[in-house]
Amino acid sequence: MKTRLFVALLFLAMPGVALAASDIVVHRDPGCGCCEKWAQAVRAKLGRKVVMRDDASRSELQRKAGMPRTLASCHSAIVDGYMIEGHVPISDVKRLLATRPAGVKGIAVAGMPIGSEGMEVAG
Image 1 (cartoon, rainbow, N blue to C red):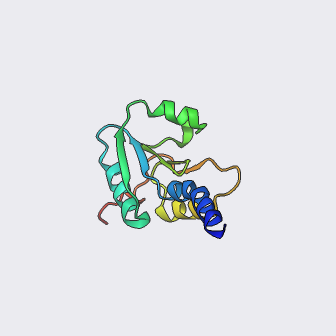
Image 2 (image 1 turned 60 degrees about the vertical axis):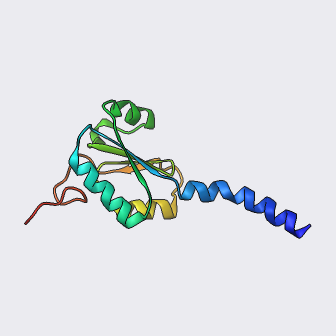
């Protein structure tokens, strides 16, 4: 009986484990190089697979997610059901995923700020 209960609980827990380890899908403006740099930082700091998709119709994805146009950037990532728009620091993505605040659909950094992850420049 204990074995059956353990196996049943294990199967119930598996979808949550699979979700927590899901790939990160980054929709980017086709050919954008800074998006790849941001994705490299995600791979290194989150230790997850990142799938890059050139997406000329990202505005539709953003609209469906309810993201204001004023927060648009060059890429939109989907991470465990959250939308991460632009060059959001990976530490903030980690905090979002750890805390999962109620009512939050995602986080954004508008534009392409110089010095943000993926937008580093010498000097």
